[in-house]
Length: 178
Image (cartoon, rainbow, N blue to C red; front, side):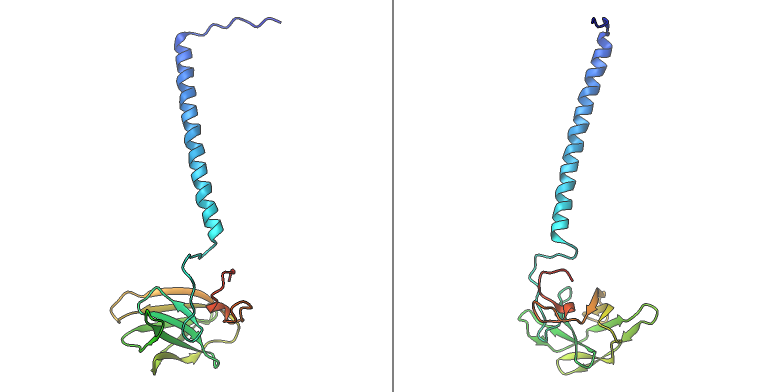
């Protein structure tokens, strides 16, 4: 079988050659972008949501340590379901509360409970108890001074005991998902 003789002009060949170069350049650029995206996605998936390479630490009472404010603040639920906020220095020891302003909201969205705090020695103690239940949404707003910008922490207050570290899950220092 004989193939037909095709005649292609020099201009057509040049156009095809340029298009091939552009296509190859585009393919290489897309492959590089895909590889970069895959690397970033893999690292994010490996890390997991909220992952940090910092070692998690519990506060002096075994509560959740909030490190986005100085001094750090420990969020701890007492046996009578009140919230205790203890400020913690860099040495891990309690620091007496000064002018810090704390606002905590918890409970169901339809009926949120706003906690108010009073000074009680080296910590602040909520005047109200948290609502019944072992899993509650919590929003903690902390200000170093009344005029400073609030630092906001949101988490699920899971009062179940962690089988690994034996702390309440909201304050767990293990690496498992919470």
